[in-house]
Structures are given as structure tokens and as C-alpha cells.
Image 1 (spheres, rainbow, N blue to C red):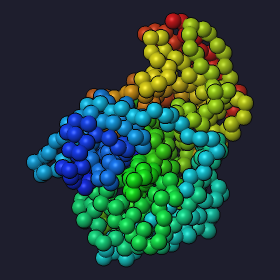
Image 2: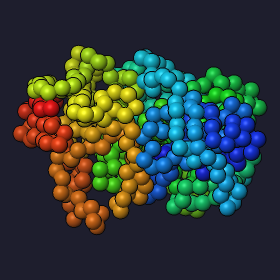
Image 3: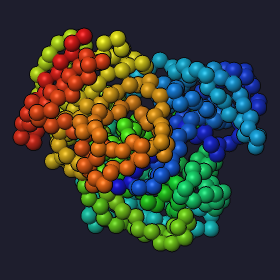
Image 4: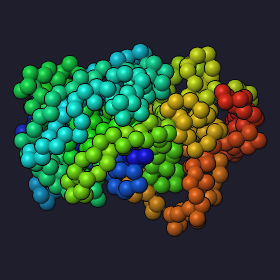
Length: 497
């Protein structure tokens, strides 16, 4: 499994901001589209990055600096037209950026339309002087468009198979792919580092790729998402988020060969539609309950080999079947969770609820309980509430779960970045799981005290029958009463204030 761990909004390594573009908007007010990108390292590796940038109407890009405390608020403006109040700064190397003091997003929901099909273009890119090709273009179409995988192509799962199931039919992709095209520069021009550093100049790479595609007669404006497919490594990471070209903002991924498979794409496509990570209860990427955190796979096959520029050796590429899906809170955030499939606890009350497994098809069952908190908003940009969902790992795309049970998460839209001694990056998101078995992770020495995964940290975070979560300061309790076969859990929720 690959832990995708970095978010980046096109900050470092972007084109320098021209003084004319910046000062034309005044030195304190900047207006454009907010792009964010996340950089996620390989399975078991450390690193990653999160970058923010503002795409101006004249096509220039302004790297943004966002305070950790404002991270959650900024993520809600992903891909939106924004007005930023801040100051223009120049570092010792002459690179300019804007330090954002305030971000005002245009009105409008982040939720997507139901039953949406988005067009995605795979732009296949060889670095100058490197002629290897990971796959032919037919592979990327077979990886995306069908719902069922093609064993002959060594593809155990497809992108549309994953999204069709996890979005309950709300999101599908229609993919096209270019022939392999050669970038004007070699790998070190775009990423002059190895595994241990985040250095990829995504803006330069994207610009050169867009020019190649346009010169080949492709109208990139027809697409919603662009996948930049690289024939060799970048830096530490695979990347996902958004980018801009020709006055349009696109969802985007930047994938080295090791990330060109359904599991990594499912994570990075999540970033491309505005999802942050989840977890960060104990350490970075620590939640096995969400593909946007510690990704779990239910099967894996070797599907390619390439000569790695970072290793200077041949590496195998593993194609995986995603095994932990998207969490209910993220599905609700994207507009995939109908109101009739959730119960909202918005005042003092006690309710017994049958909570249907997240992985089952969406019908009439309750998929999520949202517990509004006394004194906090339950909607809007500062919303703060608890979510309760049932996870049972018997169905496709959740067969890699570390156990069955009820997952309770603290969901806060304006949450600041989470960091500390056990966190190699602070790219947390909205949702933080509440552990049913606290005390099995050593937060001082950052280890499991010899316990074997998944018997520590969030690997065994599920609440099982007979257990009750009680939080007196929030005036909330959740009791798991029983499991109903492999379909649901019965829970009792009490809010006293």
C-alpha cells in the first residue's frame, strides 16, 4: 500500500510571480482561482508537501503562504474564485509569494452534482533523454473506463469501478489518453532531487505538458481533470490537487510510474476533487479507515517494471485493489450522502439507530449519524460535529479494512494543521478518528511498544458491541448495541445538552 501524504497548492517551484501581475491587483488584494496540491510519499516513506497558489486571470501563478491555523479554511476554497488579502514577499533567492491573511471564497457549495461524469485526459510524458514507457496508452484507458478490471492487463481494480461503488453512482470518469510525448527537459529540470525531498516544479511541468498537448491538436479545455503521467520518478511523491491553464482550473494528478495504478489514483483523484487527508490522531497518515489516509489494499499484482532515476535501479510497479474506501464524512462533504440516508442529532435527545455498512449499495438505509455539538455550528465553513458510520469489510473496495465496527470521527471544517513529534508532516484534514482503544501507541517515543499492526493506534479504532464512547465535555455518548449479520450495527446516541 502507498501512503499518500502530501498536499500542495502549487507553491514551491512555481513560476516566479511577475511584479506587474501582482501589483496590478494592488500589493494587498489578490483575486483569482485557489489551487491546492498534495504530495504523497511511497508506502512506508516519509516526506510529502502541501502547496497553495493563486491562478490570476492573466495566466500567471502566485504561490501562497497559508498559516497552519488557516489550513482548514483554505481547503474549503479549493478550486474556487477567491479574493485574498495579504502581503507580497520576496525571499533571499528572489522568489515572490503572497502571505495570505484572509481568504474570501466565492459563494457556492463544494458539493458536486449527482450522477456526474467527468472527462479526464491522461497526458503521457517522457523526460528528455529518457525513452522508457511504463505502459502503452491502452493501459490507462483500461485502468479507468471499465468498471470491471482486466486480468490480462494485470489490473486488479479500475478507477471507475472504485468510484462507481464508493460514490454510490454519483461520480464516473470518461478517460482519453495521448500518445507518449517528450518534454523539452530532463527529469532534473523538473525535479532535481530524490526520494527524501519535495522539489517537483509542478507548474513548469504542467505548462510544458499543456503546450505539448495543445500543439498536438488536443483541446484540453474539454476536460475536467488532467493526469500528467511521467515515465520516471519525480521527487518523494505522487501528487494530486488542481492546476490552471488557459484561464481554466483543472483537477490534476502528477504520477511517477509507481503511482500509475488504481489505489494511488483513487487517493490522488480524491485530492483532485477537493478531499483532504483524514487521520492524524497519533501520526501522519494513521487512519486505515480512509483511502485518503493510510491506504489499505485487498490485493496487489506486479504490473510493470521501470528503471528508477531515484534508485538508479529497476523497480517493480504494483497494481492494487483499494481496500478502505472513502469515509462517510467525506461523502457527505462532496454531496454524495442524501439527507434521507443520515440522521442528524441536533439537540438533546436519545435515539437508537440501525446504521448500515458504508460499503453496501445506497438504498434506504441510514449511512451516517451526524451529531451536532452544543455551542458549535453544524453547517457552514466553521461546522464542527461528530460523524458515526458502520464499517464491515466484506464488500468490494473495503475488503482491506483492519476490522469491523463503528467508526466515530471528530469532523471540523476549519480545523488547523495537526503536527508534533510523531508527525513527519502536518497535512491533516477535516476528520480525526476517535480511538476505541487509546493507550496502545507511545506518543513520546512514537512507537507501538512491540504491538503488531493492526493492534495499535487507529488500526483497532473501531467501536464494537458492548462498548460506549462517552465525552462529558461534548455532552455526547454513543453505544454500540449489536451487529446485524454483515450488514449493519445498532447504535444508541445520546446528547444531553
